[in-house]
Image 1 (cartoon, one colour):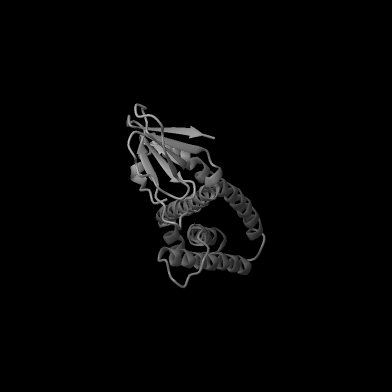
Image 2 (image 1 turned 120 degrees about the vertical axis):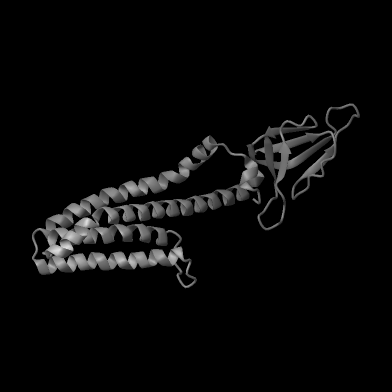
Length: 246
């Protein structure tokens, strides 16, 4: 809508309340994926304990290869490569899953494959560092994914507001002086009487938001493409009154 976020003066509570719907989907998805990952881990452990070394090696190499491909997809997304025509969530999810699978492949190799003492000791010494790095990449993936979900949800809500403006509740503005409020669908009426508290009435406005002691109003015919502005009015000015009507 062209309004700078700083001018809204949202409090921490405002951000938390407004983000609840956005953060629910990533958290629920992560929990479901966690349950599935535990189930797959137990199934894979059961299978690896009953097959020969050759097949164990193939499984570990396969998991590692998948992890490297996914990490490559995530890195392409981080670099915003122009040739990477990927869905928005593909890169952050690939980055997190790839990092997790790579560590899982190393962990599985250390447990189920016969290794000499030197590589086994090296894997043991670097285990803590590897898991810290993987945890960091998972956090990056989570923040990145949540930011994309938030942007998509915000765009969807904005388009919904734009489409439903004609049927939203009305905001009627009264003022002592002519405010020169204009926009598609906005009308101004000169009220009768010279001793009235307010001399002008503006119709055809819709409330977008009330925050930070200000009303943010839209003309009823507002479209992202028509260049109409958002009207910002203080709610404490004695010369202005904003009434809401169904």
